[in-house]
Image (tube, rainbow, N blue to C red; front, side):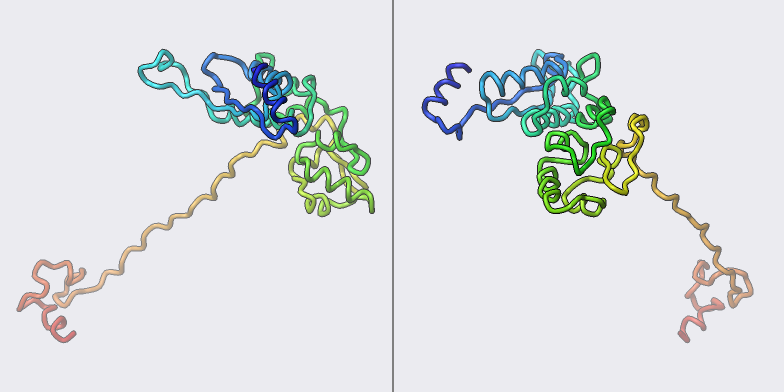
Length: 247
């Protein structure tokens, strides 16, 4: 890899071409933190352009055919951490807060939210004063919306959620972490509550009405039943035969 990186730097000074690789996650029983450390090495030491993550799936008649498959949500979380490192420029010490003591990422919350909840002392952030790096630490604010906030602040202060949502800020995720004139910021202690988990809404109970009994009518023969249910209906001599012919 060192040789390849040096060759690319010589023949491609602009850096438009680079190395990419794919990591199969879970086959070696590694932790998410182990994968992250390898990712940092690939990006930093060997100047890789991209690292992709694929969940391990066992294949019959191979040495790992009895190994448990890796759930897809695990690779989704790794892509989110990858994004925080490459695009949001999070430091390693910050990202470490997203992992549990065993070195795995949370299933319930995304890494950015877990990191924010572990640093409640820095929130709520004044949306009109925070730097770009501070804005990018707020769940619900991405690189594009952070740039729009900085541009908007050059002309006037931001004081409504309508303005923030028009810039791409996700109110449901960002509201406990930001403040601006007229906003009611959530106390830091409440940020530990489960405010961001999407729970499936229970469908409304369907009212099933009991079938209405058909009104019993007297047949021409005097029996309280329908002529169509009679085995002799339509035969000459049946009391309903005349009525059928008339119809």
